[in-house]
Image (cartoon, rainbow, N blue to C red; front, top):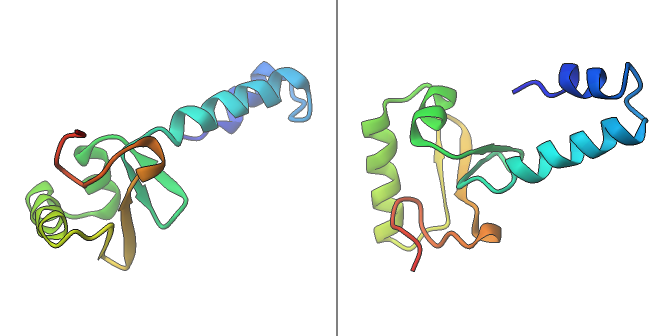
Length: 99
């Protein structure tokens, strides 16, 4: 999502206003709570969105994640992108539910 237009409206065109900064912080906090991290910068909460971004099928993505989970890996590479699960939010695997 492109947050800038929403933040600009909130800050009445001023990105340095306190309102714009608060909204930007809120968007950032919400984004980093997602399950998957790509290239240490983009966050995704669903396999659908992640597979669309990576331009791979959900089946291929799920198979790669299952393999990584079985091998205890914390990251994998697909289409020159590094995919990790967000262990800062308590996730311990790509596909298994949290304990």
